[in-house]
Amino acid sequence: MSLYQLTAHELHDKLKAREISAVELAESVYGRIEEVEPHVKGYLTLTKEIALEQAGAADAGFQNGNEMPPLAGIPIAIKDVICTKNVRTTCASKILSNFVPPYDATVMTKLHQQGVVVIGKTNMDEFAMGSSTENSAYQITHNPWDLETIPGGSSGGSAAVVSADTAICSLGSDTGGSIRQPAALCGVVGMKPTYGRVSRYGLVAFASSLDQIGPFTKDVTDCALVLNAICGNDEMDSTSVDVPVPDFTQSLINDVRGLKIGVPKEYFTEGLDTEVADCVQTAIAELEKLGASVEEISLPHTDYAIATYYIIAPAEASANLARYDGVRYGYRTEEPADLINMYKKTRSEGFGQEVKRRIMLGTFALSAGYQDAYYKKAQKVRTLIKSDFDNAFKKVDVIATPTSPTPAFKIGERTADPLQMYLCDVMTTPASHAGLPGISIPCGFVENGLPVGLQLLAAPFEEEKILRVAYTFEQNTEHHLQKPEISNVKGK
Amino acid sequence: MATITTEGVSHVANLARLEFNEEETQDFTEQLSRILDYIGKLNELRTDDVPPTSHIHPLHNITKADAVKTSLPRDAVLANAPEPEEGYFGVPRVIDIE
Image (cartoon, rainbow over all chains, first blue to last red; front, side, top):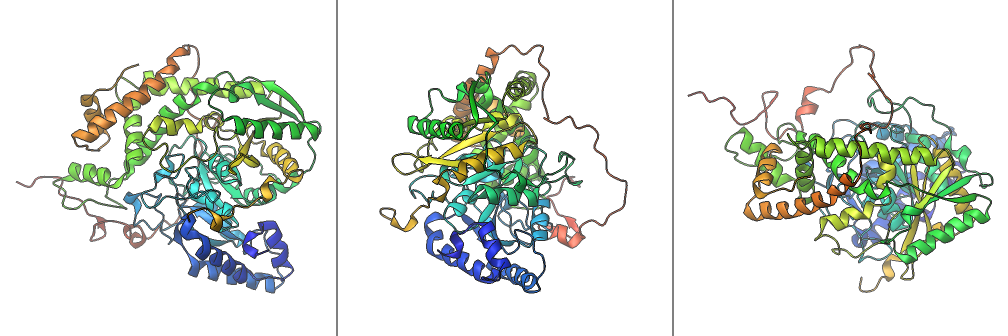
């Protein structure tokens, strides 16, 4: 087995025992990148020179016999929406094509304290708006399981590189499902922590009341390790919550006896692919066999989550994206007639179609005469959706659902109809409205070989319950051990 | 809920500091109308007595110590500016000097 195929915890053991060096490990990952990245196209920027320096520093620590953090020397990829000091951060937008942040996001500071090796910045839907990564201004990322299909989105690059073994783990961001959905479609573990668990300082804002950073990993143990590294209150983000952060590795318990799992009937209706439904039902039956009690529950406002999301998220986005005006950073149009003309031309030339669509939708929903009918209405329905979950968690510990209604679809299949693309998020947006933690773990494959994800949700700040159920499932199944055979895909 | 006309799209575009040609205006009118139609399903729900949720945690007035800290050096901030000018962000003339 090559080093790039291993998990972070396996690699930590080898680094600690000095069987391997971090430089050797980084070289192994870059070798893999040379081999498959031309097919997958998950990265927008590679930072090999810096990575090898970071790996050298980690090696020095190990050689001195220091007690090194679990992620020291571990190659990680970062979604290009997270500010990395002195490394270009584009949000996959033309408007930020030359933006080099003068500071690190808090999650980057925390990862550097661990001594990680940053491999590069990953592709995404422009400003994290999309469900297929096709909205990138730069390139299309291909799903490693079938290069003709999308990797999901918006963190499609971060999911694809972990799936393709071109990073050991990665960070993404999730506003309405942008970690969980691509994790499901690429067959990896992806977790959105509770809103407020992880500082958003340095995460380029899309919808501030929903955005949250989280990890993509090859297994649940690595997920716990990355969470340990990035969670915590931060005075630079007043919406990060001051609650104690547990050691998430303590939740890696192979036992679900005594836990109650709720299965919401509203998630198993028309629109759910039958093969996906079968995989998820089989996974839930497996958890029941392992000792969890399973009961059907109802989340009656599920069907309103997408409509609510496509008011709240664009409304917040229209305000957040007002800052891209060509004055302080990023792209500026050439030879504007005057200041207002500069704003308009800069923004019209710099933003892609989907971003413009959402700015328009959000500006409309907040405009005079419409704010109560749209924005306030959506905020009220958000309350109803949150109440559904509050009621459910009085009865059950964890909720299990499909992550995505379908497996990965063909590139180009849904780009013509924005509404069809929005409906990709039907299983993930409800939990986003309620700020809940959620994970997607591999739970099987459909007949044509594409992976299926199981979504597990818990009450706010109860990530530990999710990790315990996910870990138990993983320890008793082998879905997470399957790897795509990228070079063997037909015609590639 | 309302539908949106091409005039409406042009009005909103101006508010958002965007500009579209005729074809784009037409496309956005059709797309936004379809999306707003779909969003109209929220009117199936009675929400008169439901309080709005703007934020999921009960956070109020988060304050920081009133302490002086170093900020980014001017050069670092201006390094990303499209047209820096003598230590400032340069923009097209705002006030007419006629």
